Amino acid sequence: MVLQRAPQRAVVWGYGDTNAVTILSINNKFYHTISGPVAVNKLVIVTQPVANGSVVSISLNDVRFGDVWICSGQSNMPMAIVDNFNASEEIAQAANYPKIRLFTASLRSSPTPVEELLQITQSWSVAGPSSVGGPSYAYASATCWIYGRMIHVGLGGQPIGLIATSWGGAIIEVWMPPQALIDCGIST
Image 1 (cartoon, helix red, strand yellow):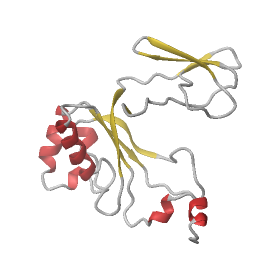
Image 2 (cartoon, rainbow, N blue to C red):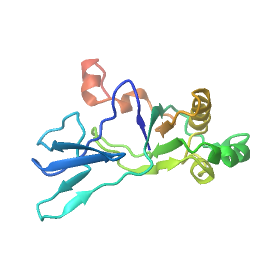
Image 3 (cartoon, rainbow, N blue to C red):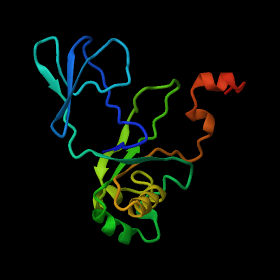
Image 4 (cartoon, rainbow, N blue to C red):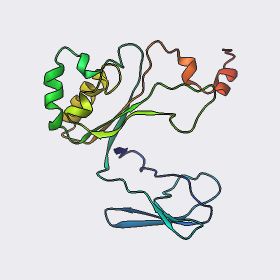
């Protein structure tokens, strides 16, 4: 995956037992904290002892710090690279950009706001023919990929994270929390 490099520091968060020591290790540098009963904006939960005495560890490998872009929109945004006019060339060249990472959210709706995605179509993947050349209207967005590739080259090889989350024909109101609609006097 790619975590945002600036202007803010990356925030690592999660869920675990209250008042447990949590340790985060990045490049042999260790960060310690105590998990609390409410969410906080600091580094938490990578390694943590649980009630039965065992230790839960989550290991994320090959994480880059760079620029993260959300690619969203309607009908043209979910068009996959395989549907692009130069698809075979784009797919073949994708392996030349290993610092670009792709992620695609699934089309799953919820009648209430949710904290986590209900389903993921493409987990964080290193750019390559299989991650870029996925099925029509299901994997990496052509617009998102080409835009991200151009930014990556333009920034001298800076790592780029591309999050594709688009839904053809969706109205803006379905992406907004209910309270925001109420505050604006909009009924659905």
